[in-house]
Length: 522
Image 1 (cartoon, rainbow, N blue to C red):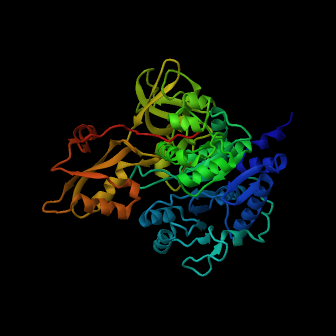
Image 2: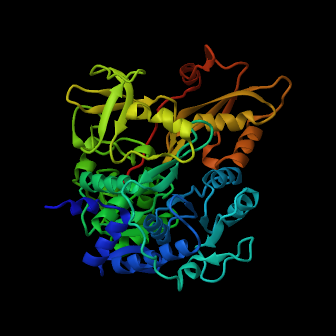
Image 3: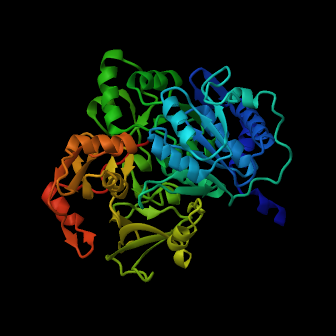
């Protein structure tokens, strides 16, 4: 043996080139009428990386994706990996004000944007943001029609571009994927995950979910969340096939699953219910799809999934640790299983000392899936990584057999379907209304969405704003799914010293169910 093998640690570009050599004719990506082999995908990535480099994009720069799911999104991730650039898929459901914040915070060199469905919002954010990236429209065959005449389309951008010149190879530790997390301090933070983190997360999920190289994964969940990425990356690691759809539509999904023989998909329970209803009439063949036991009608349409993940799904984690740090499938008496073997997890008190078995403390972790840090947040990074461990802000209990049960976030989070909603952000929005003196937000159980947002509001003296006006105010300032569904007006909020007593609010106003429901991906 010699030391030269030490440079072979996997990166996204190394994986892509490896598949292009060993599986050149295997289908890598399907998106509408587009079907790309691993060889074709690698060639497109090489030219896209060359086009970005020729446009002046350099290591450490940011490239944003402002659009829905598409094969070009993953191509851009891989091209950014080639040149050491950070790729950020942005939540296209956000309001103009939220998009302006992300644009100014990320300060990108290039933005790939979409006209269909979200063009008007993006153009308004573009006009209001104090940054000047290059804008490239991805969803058109001809010239772009943005606010500037020099807009070009994605295909124009890469057409005729020279391949990427020989550069230093991507390093495992360089930041690659930036995902904006929920606004747990009133505004979002961009968590930067490295090549190493993404490849390791792909390996972990492929192992636990017992995925195979001939799998076909349907990317029907949003790729601005890590929930879908976990299986996207596992599919990438295995050299299997990723299928992309721009949005969740039961009619479309039925056809895609049947036509492409999808074996896995990111589907929320509400979507499964809609598929059952529709397929009772359409009779599409969904037997390629492996799924854990669910609704009897759904189980009759799909094939059983007997993987470790299906037998005991879930775990605990967050974007900052590559999605999941523990997997229930790894066993133990704890509800959320054990950490993936390459990850180290402790449960500590406020001084960083391990708490006794059975007691509750904060989960702190380290290992290859932990993020590099938040973009442009030096003080927050210093706080979160104190003592050389990443402090998750999540409470857990270690059991006698070493397994873990997640208890709750140290600061509350509302889970509405697949969306994380942080009360601090909604409360800050409500307080911006001139009639509001104080506001607190809780999650209340919701039969369809797991939880919905309820606001408890104290109005200024003499103010006349009603619930409808405040909900409309929130809808105009933040993503619609974050707005309160109901508002109760009170004279004062219950307090514990200087802090709002959320336990008292939950008890009085029907809150509960934290952290709420979750996704189901198979």
